Image (cartoon, rainbow, N blue to C red):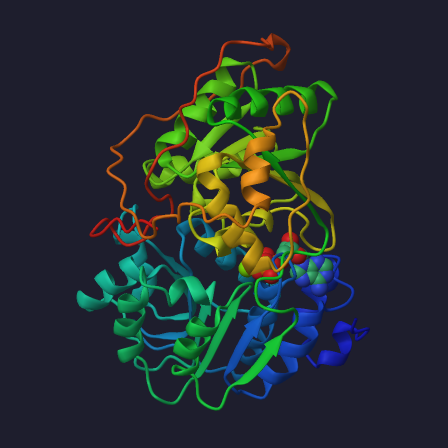
Amino acid sequence: MNERKFEQLELSAPIQRALSERGYTKPSPIQAKAIPLLLKGGDLLACAQTGTGKTAAFALPLLHNIASCGRKPFRRGVRHLVLTPTRELAGQVADSFKIYGKYIKFSTGLVYGGVSEKPQIKQLFQGLDVLVACPGRLIDLMDQGHVDLSQVETFILDEADRMLDMGFIRDIRKIESKLPKKRQTLLFSATMATEITKLGQAMLYKPDEVRIAPQGSTAEKVDQQVLFLGKNAKQKLILDMLHRRFDDNQEELSLIFTRTKHGAKNLAKKFIQEGLSADSIHGNKSQSAREKTLDRYRQGEIDILVATDVAARGIDVKNITLVVNYDLPMEPDAYVHRIGRTARAGKSGQAISFCTEEEVALLRQVERLIKKPIPVKRDHDYHLQEVEDLHTSKRPVKKPAQGRRSGASAGSRSRGRPNRTANKRGKPFRSGAGGNGGSSERTSSGRRNYQR
Ligand code: ADP
Ligand code: MG
């Protein structure tokens, strides 16, 4: 553990002030390593577990640069460009810049799809010190001549491995082709498989590489468990778990991941019917509804958020103490990111994964990635020994299909904050939230709805 203090990192005084106001006393390991390297101006590939402060690791040196150089962006120009895979994460990263740069004069912009272009075009017209964007909308605005990337000084990919995978790579290449050759490029993520690392390195010039933990490492303080059960028992078990949790008067937040948008919507609806305080967030919701739901969840107005992988990466919400993989993810890295929504900034948390016979192959690929077995929780009402046996046996299991597309159509929103005292237990259950298809959507303005 690095015992350095922020003062030793030579960041400008207004930044130090914002940090101490925020209660940051010492840099996290990734911050302690990355910040000095970035202040020197080199390229960087950085990998550190979820919740360890990667945002500040790239934002602080960038803000320091803005504070100390005094150069102004020119019309439609952007000095520092950060790309993220989801709109919610883009908003959160832009907010972090504002928090850390509270005492610095600089301009930030936010560009993503699903909302009107007009205010974004207006923001860009003046030129921006920092632009946080999702690739799809940025390309739309670029093609229309509303943004000029020819003088970008720093190019950052947050959740870099996701940005370089097949859902985004074409857009990234297109954006990269508009950037000047001479620039600083930074890649940050909690997961970075070898193939992706190679792809990323091709974008970098003599990069430094910082890896705080081996590839696939989960956040240190997550207590992980897996439950083996039948497909039709999932809904009853989750209801039992959540009722028990809230009967015990827990004020903490829970985050439940499903594989499909419909699954998320239906499960949240079920929770509400059962008197729980829940809502969902997924790609079939309008952007404003997604933002509103996330805000209410952040404020603690809803206790349970049911989400697709659109909420798997980057989202930082205090007080999430339980993550449930209601369905295991199709791609193993998503597991690391999903459970990383808890146990952030040194806190601890719990992650429970449901595994049916059909999901044993998915569980195996997760365990291969994180390089350890997930401890089994044997809940006697639900435990299916034959599924556990299938998992522990060396028998081949059906491989998960990769890269599926979902034909899910638009769905209605389920919201509201019902009275928790209206709990109804032991209702008959049905399985409804499983099924095919991906859940993590492209963030472009609806041209493609890429599914993982
Ligand atoms: P990551 O991108 O690595 O998942 P974030 O940048 O979202 O992590 O930060 C996770 C949480 O840790 C945020 O709530 C942030 O405010 C907090 N945090 C970051 N750096 C520090 C620090 N040095 N001291 C205390 N809290 C920090
Ligand atoms: Mg992050």
